[in-house]
Length: 404
Image (cartoon, rainbow, N blue to C red; front, top):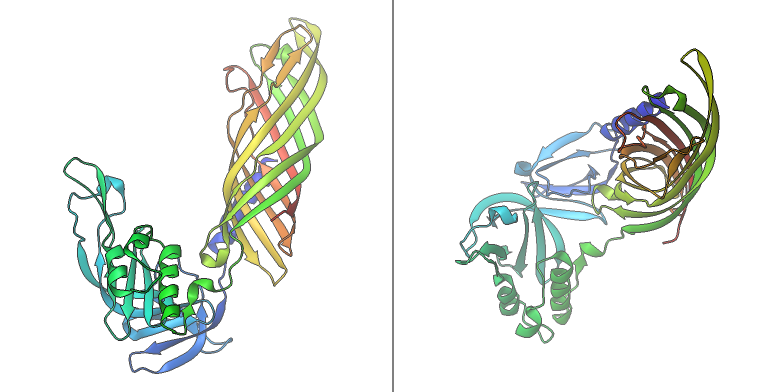
């Protein structure tokens, strides 16, 4: 079992480190304003890139090109970026680093801005690897301007907001459905701002390119996860060897309900998983031990029931339109349910566990049916007993069905 768990851990690390992202049809425009049709390595960037890889043909060699040589690039039907020199507010989003100044701290930078909405009024987005998120806009042939939002501390060290972006919207995107009253409820996020720019462009009869309505996979799945556990348990106490017991292996049923949260970048390949699972292990054993020049027979019984809660990460490899494989790793928090080890002498051990880890690999068909093999690291069942050592191991075969 230990070797199997190490194998899962190695596979999990190796496959993620060597996973490949496909090259997809796209284009870029160079400094000479030439449009080059090509294949772009689509990383579905979370943070706005400063460079990208491309091929001129499917069998061609990958080449890297950076922001200094590209005015614009995009992956068709997915995303588009334009190079622009803009004023970016450097104010921190971390509450521990809020300043006591209401005004933004602007710094001029040349970046690739992600196009969200294009029409009479354009909306752009920027995010860097420090968690800085900023929105920008442009009307007709004007320059690109920042939409201003900042959190800061006032003189009483209370959090306040500079919501200047709301007045900017009222001043520059005025139309009947956008009033000062309605603007107060517009949050500084993609959903709210995209809606404002879509409404404005529609009111002005403009054709809209909305990159936020591109086809996306569902970002949440709820999965029923029944399965079979192959478990084994042995317990040991060097101070009381007559109570040592090897309960052997048992095959038991497990049932889980998994919440899967797909992360909306890197082409939806990453997911956070949370799977409350009922599992049990029941067995009894008659052990014969030699102590003080005689043999002693000891009867022991274990009744271990618990709710396991694996919390972890999953990574998908897409094979085709209907099939994908995945690997995942999780920390397993275990809540035992009135579980004990009883001895014929009348004494008992209450089972209270420590966390352990699980690593799995599986297959999904039509985003509906799944199958997984999962190995667990050793779990300690006796966290409250200093002298008792337990060796509980589990290997699971899990079947899944996606409800939605």
